[in-house]
Length: 199
Image (cartoon, rainbow, N blue to C red; front, top):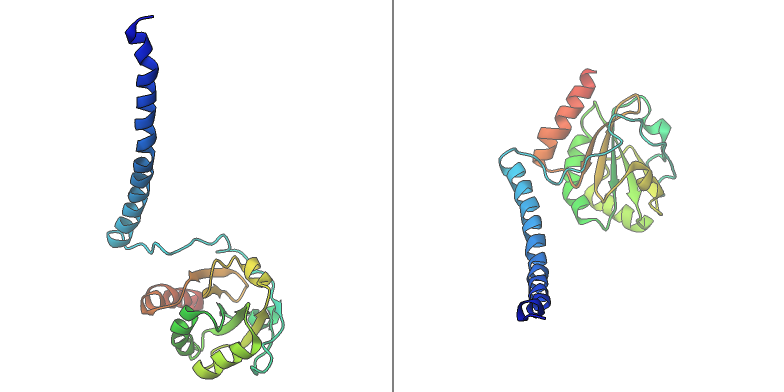
C-alpha cells in the first residue's frame, strides 16, 4: 500500500471536519438572507412584515355563542350581535399590555356610526376584565367570555390583541394581528371600513 493511499482516509476526515464547520456559517447566512429580504420589503416596498395572512379572509366568520362578561352591562356575544352590521371583533384580555395600548383607538372607533365593536375576552379573569374596562372605558356593544380559548382557535387567533372586520353578511373582510396604531388605523382599517360601507 502506497503512502498516498494511506493518506486518503486522513484527507477525507479533514475535509469532513471543514464541511461540518461550515454548516453553522451556511445556516447563519440563510437566516441573514431571510432577515435582509424582510427588512428590504419593509423599508423599500413598504410591506408590513408583521402581517400574517388569514385563511378566513373572504369566508364566513365562525359562529359565536359566548356568555357575556358578568357585570359589564353588555350583551353576550352571539351571532345575533353581529348579523347585519359592519362589525369589528376584537380579541382582548386585561393581562395583555398591547391591548391596553390600542384601547384608546377602539374607544375612538366606538363613535363611528358605521361600525359595531364587540369583544372576545380571552383567557381572562372576570374581575380583572371588569377592572380593565372600568379603568380604560368600554367600547364594546357585546363581550363574550372565552376562558379556554376555544372561540379564539375557531377564529384563527395567533396572539392578542387581534381584530377582524366582519361585513353585514358575516364575511371576514380584514384581519389585524397585534394592536392598532395610527398607521394601521388610517392606512388599513379605516379604508376597509369605508370600502365596506360603500358596499
